[in-house]
Amino acid sequence: MNKISPQSLAAKKAKGEKFAVLTAYDATFARVVDEAGIDVILVGDSLGNVLQGHTSTLPVSVEDMCYHTACVDRGTEKALIVADLPFGSYNTIDDTLSNATALMQSGAHMVKLEGGQWLCESIRLLTERGIPVCGHLGLTPQSVNTLGGFKVQGRDEAGARRIITDAKALEDAGASLLVVECVPTELGQRLSEALTIPVIGIGAGPQTDAQVLVLHDLLGISRRIPKFVKNFLADAPDIATALENYRVAVEQGEFPGPEHSFD
Ligand SMILES: Nc1nc(=O)c2c([nH]1)NC[C@@H]1CN(c3ccc(C(=O)N[C@@H](CCC(=O)O)C(=O)O)cc3)CN21
Ligand SMILES: CC(C)C(=O)C(=O)O
Ligand SMILES: [Mg+2]
Image 1 (tube, rainbow, N blue to C red):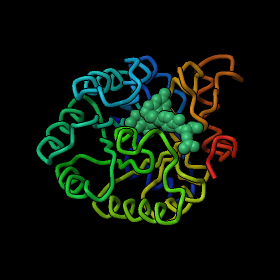
Image 2 (image 1 turned 180 degrees about the horizontal axis):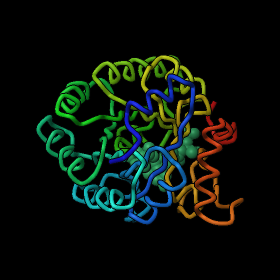
Image 3 (image 1 turned 90 degrees about the vertical axis):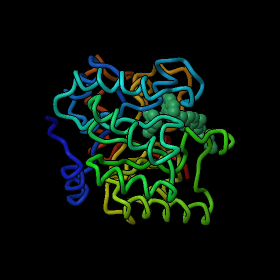
């Protein structure tokens, strides 16, 4: 049984303690991430980019996600495992419940889905059935074709208000965590203040309750490196130390800096 829970993460926020989240997709990296003291491992659909070589997350299947979640589960002792529901796997309530069940039976402790108010009924049903939920707002990569690219979201006041309204709706529906991707620093701060549940930022500035990065980006081996990424292996002797340095930098509020944030 993992030692980190939605409740222990909520308690950290209540005490003003920040925590680190990192992706992993296999047992060996999951073990190294777990041993670095990182509280949450995200089995992200970013595996479509970093493992499969696609230019988006859209081709990733539920089968792919279950396979990698099971691999990560075998390498993890302490961390909470969150698995992405991939593109097209939560279009209907029935699909949402059966695909989330498959991820949980593969070893996930929580599922993540991208979107706002339209997801509230799904989130209510999932939590009623014992499946904790992480929301994902701001730049939602599964919607890259409707967004018109990987662009910063919530730059104007109306857009920022829409994201805050969505975030409160997800929390009210029962979400335990919220990822916010690529929004201005000020909006990252407003979201963290507006919500009781921990807000995990990626390109959302230093004021969020937690930070997440893609493992291969942090190690400096990804094809394209977004602005919000820091290569932690550049100043470390090995991968284990790089991951520990990332965790400490997040916990102490030293990462991300202004050079990794949008204003
Ligand atoms: N390797 C990897 N890292 C990620 O962070 C990641 C993935 N893959 N795949 C899924 C999504 C896609 N993500 C992305 C991809 C590109 C940008 C990007 O190019 N952002 C611009 C912002 C442009 C603007 O100012 O509007 C940047 O400069 O970082 C951001 C997030 C985040 N996720
Ligand atoms: C970038 C993070 C938040 C994600 O959703 C993923 O890795 O798929
Ligand atoms: Mg994802």
